[in-house]
Image (cartoon, rainbow, N blue to C red; front, side, top):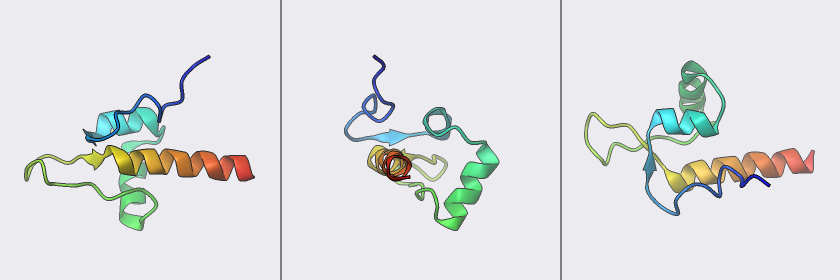
Length: 73
């Protein structure tokens, strides 16, 4: 049995875009369009002005929300 992708995530921390896209199978342009529209979480720049990353908690919530919506359908 394979563990779910959200179970493999650490409890806290940050993910860079390549790691996020391994978990959420969309293209870079689709991801950034979703960030702009509010469909996907906003990144943080707290690690540095040239570092874009997402909080693990936000990505986990996105995955779990998508799984819940899929189960409800």
